[in-house]
Figure 1 (cartoon, rainbow, N blue to C red):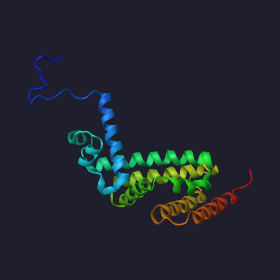
Figure 2 (figure 1 turned 60 degrees about the vertical axis):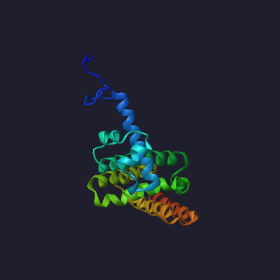
Figure 3 (figure 1 turned 120 degrees about the horizontal axis):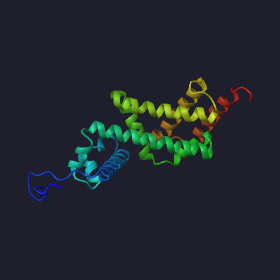
Figure 4 (figure 1 turned 90 degrees about the vertical axis):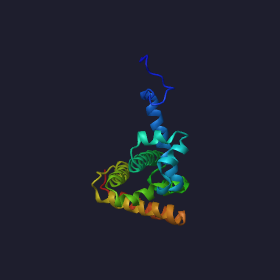
Length: 197
């Protein structure tokens, strides 16, 4: 310990946070960014708003996230991973055709945040790579469920159908029965095209 260091004196830097405390603070800030993203969309995520939401000083936000772009990218990545995990669990428990029910009961503001960033990814190469993780993850889920390679055309076609129905439900809030019927038909079409075991 430095005997000449007095943290109460101006001009002297306090000891850096421990690794555990630093990880906790960073995780808290990132969770706050995800919350703001899902509550208010792209524009709601600023360094100041995240610091306030996390009950931490503004300096902590700018210390762990050097730019707003970095903050948004990491929040988007976390949201994508969370949604993929949730979707995989739902498919395992309820089946692929029940995904429309999962979409209908999911937090709509959270879903809107995900799709809003997905659209912004068209103008941002960093976000675009994260958006690809979402698409690739969904394709992998469908391929695993149908026991098909990810490159199979039926998998991609089914994902495209699912994405369209998902977006329509979240944005337009179309009748759930219509989406359920269309997804069931798409899944059956893909399954009927499979060769016999």
